[in-house]
Amino acid sequence: MKPSKLYTNQPDRFAAVEFTPELNVVLAEIRLPENQDRDTHNLGKTTLGRLLDFGFLAGRDPRFFLYRHEDRFADFVFFLEIELHDGTYVTVRRGVADQSRIAFKKHAARHQDFSDLAEREWDHVSVPFERARELLDSYLDWRALKPWRFRKGLGYFLRSQEDFGDVFQLRRFANSHADWKPFLAHILGFDAALIGEHYAKEAALTDLEAKSVTIRQELGGGDIEDAGKIDGILLLKTQEVEKKQALLDGFDFRSEDKSETKMLVDKVDERIAVLNARRYSLMANRKKIVASLQDDQILFNPDEAAELFEEAGVLFGGQIKRDFQQLIDFNKAITEERQGYLVEERADIDAELKAVNAELNTAGKRRAEMLAFLSETDTFAKYRRFTSELVTLRADIQSLQRQRDFVHRLQQLRTDIRSLQEDKIHLQSAIEADVETKSASPESLFSAIRLYFNEIVEEVIDSKALLNVSVNRLGHLEFKAELLDEAGNATSADRGHSYRKLLCVAFDLALIRAHLGEAFPRFAYHDGVLESLDDRKKELLISVLRRYTEMGIQSIATLIDSDLPKRLADQPFFETEEIVLLLHDEGENGRLFKMASW
Image (tube, rainbow, N blue to C red; front, top):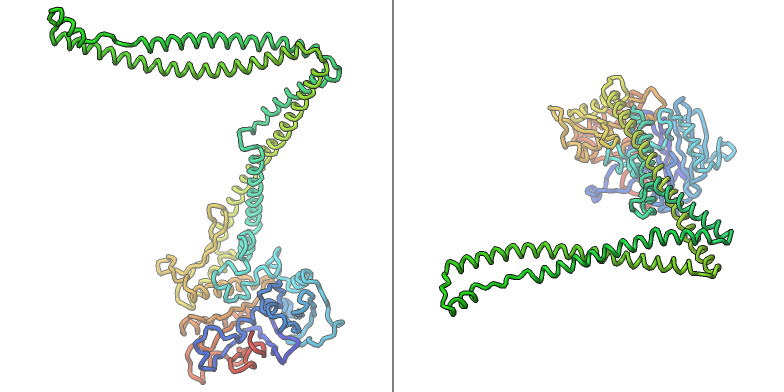
């Protein structure tokens, strides 16, 4: 349940670090004045956490310093001693050069040194990496994490600097929310099975919708999704194939001749007659319209009439002339309107004539082909024609069958999609009910974690903090950790780095405390735990860590001496036994690895 000792096969280059079950401080002292203002010092304060992760069988990462500088660390073998739930210990041996071959040794006493232990003395030797993880999982037996393995939530108990950016989403959780939110919900006391199933349904729904789009694209994207219509056309074409095949098999085309003759008389000739009659009617109407357009002219000219009457000596008054002019204007208006209608009607007739002529041409060609077929005396020519038509029909049938299969698949997909959508709705309702119930119940695990979380934050900075879980409109859980003002409203203070780090520490400790009655990790490693806090808050936070160690929770805290609260020389901030590793910048002996920095 707790790291007990970390050592190597080369003690002269890496001194053993023996942890206590209580507060463990890794203190880096900056003694050289020229290093006081530097941000990084490469002493190994942060590296210790990475080595613990390595001992807990972290996967191979080429960016990890042991592999990035493998030429310098190839001969190192690391040993991590871990205290188990029953008070016994297991030591994990893992080398850098052969990091995928792990060894295990179970023992009763703490702080052992197995660096020179013979191979035959180990309980398991050269265990392949994945099998080694399974074996360590069984040794640790963190049953409260099941069905997940021990490494899933290890980042909450080994917080590196990169993991203080978000209280809930660790650096190792950089992939999809479906990978880590069900686990987090589980350790907070919610029904993770519902959440995991909801994500699974969502993924399956996305997959089916993508397949549906693909099938519709293969169908051409048109309105051809009526399976009944396709089946009907397929039935007719299949029947036609059978008839033509029977004719070909019997080499007898008399029935086809009869059919062609009947079609020629009943259908084609009849249609040609109808079309000719229609064309005659249209052309006659068009001729009348053209004539009307030419005849609609007013030939009476008032000016010419006035001149004529004047020559004849007949008085033609101005009022009469004006009346005639108004009559002419009125007639012109009527004529122009009538001409507009006539022009529109002529355009409609021209369009219909074009369509009729096109259909007459097609029908004429069809009639000519039928007459040629009927007058054909060469039986083999008819055979070839039937064979060609049969090939075309069969190709049409294959295309229709393929289209029908696509449509049936599409219909089945739509049925499955509707079913998944309904399942998602039911799951979302169940998730919302579960979150509401657990949030409202003072006896729930989540409520306990909430109270412990607020207690820690309030003790350190005298401000209340709220841990909250809600369900968004998509049915996904949203996790929030917020500082509250006196009115109970969320403030922006949690966005600062120092307070966000405090929220992370408070969450980790509250999580462990709430699971003290279960098989659950009982240690918390926090890198740079006091950074950016003022002195009073640092004192209070260390008091919280000490109080939590009295509950059985091991705390490993790393810090630089400049982060310590100001005190008199005879009033050290930490007890001597609390400092398990002292680093400094006065030469290689002050580093975690007693060698030149890399």
